[in-house]
Image 1 (tube, rainbow, N blue to C red):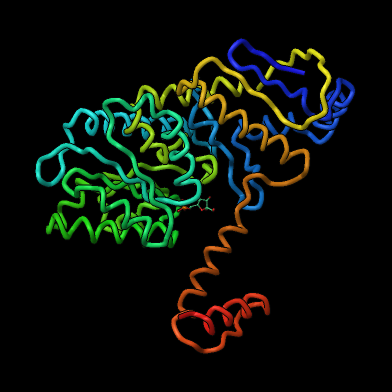
Image 2 (image 1 turned 60 degrees about the horizontal axis):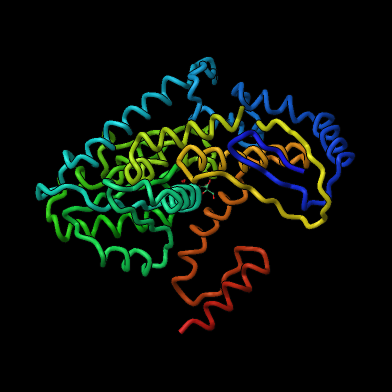
Length: 357
Ligand code: F6P
C-alpha cells in the first residue's frame, strides 16, 4: 500500500495492514476525535492540558500567514517579527558585516543547548550540509561532561566564534554550565566583558534569565511557551540552521513543513507483505523536502497521541528529572548517607558515594 503525492512516495505495504485494517484504523481515528483534536491544535486551543498551553509549532511555519489567535492575540505578528530579526542577523553574520571583538568576521557558530534545543538543529544542519556553502561552520555542545565542550573549543578561535545559547527556560543545568564554560574561555582571549555582546546570543523564552547571564537582550531571539522543546527547530531555536544554510533555505524548510500539513491524500494500491517497515522515497533532499519529512513524523506523533489518549506535548516528567538533578548534585559533595529520596534513588546515590575513587 502506498501514498504518492508526486513528491514523496510512502510505501507502508510491509506492515500488517490491509484495506480492511486501514478502514478500521480510520474509523477508530474518527471515533476518538483525531479530526476534532487537529482542528483544536491549529486553532490555538490549549490542548497541552497538563501544562495549560497551546501547541502551535505549526504557527512557526504558517507561510500562509492566516491569523492564529492565542488568548485573543494574533501570534503571527510575533512569529514574523522574530523571523525578520533572524533574517537580518543571518545576513550580517554570513556577509561578514557582523564583526567579532578583534574586527574579524565569524567563521564558527557553537550551539550550546540540550534536548530539543540541540537535536533538531543538529539533525537538520547535518542533513543539509550540501547547502552550507558561504555559511559558518556549526558545532553543537550538549553534554555536561566537560570533554564535549573542551574538545570543541580546542578547535576554535575566540576571535571568530559566535556562541548561541539555546534554552527555552534558560535554567537547564547542562546548558547553563556549558555556557559559563564557553564565556570563561572566550573572556580569557577577549579580556573585556563588553566583547560578550559580539560573540554571545540567546534563544529563549526567558528574557530576565538571559540578562542575568550577561547577554544583551537585543541579542536574544524570542520564542514562546506554546512551542514544545521537541518541536522547536522551526522557531528561533533554528538560528544555527539559518546561519549555516542561509535564511532562504531556512524558509524553504518551513515551507516544506507547512506544505506537509496540507496532511496526506491516500491512493491505496494493494501489495502483499507483512514485514512492519516503511519505505519513503523522494527525488532530492532539499530544505523543503526535509521540512515536509520532519513534519510528517510530527503529525504521526500527534495522531498516535490522540488515538492512545496520551498527551504528546506533556513534559512534567522530564522537568521533574531536571529538578531532581538540582537536588541531588549538592548531596554528592560529601560522603554522608542520603535518605531524602525513594529507596531506589537513595541506594543508587549511596552506591555511587561508597565506590567513587
Ligand atoms: O526534555 C525536556 C526539555 O524541557 C525539552 O523540552 C527541552 O528541549 C530540553 O529539556 C531543554 O530545555 P531548555 O530548552 O529549557 O534548556
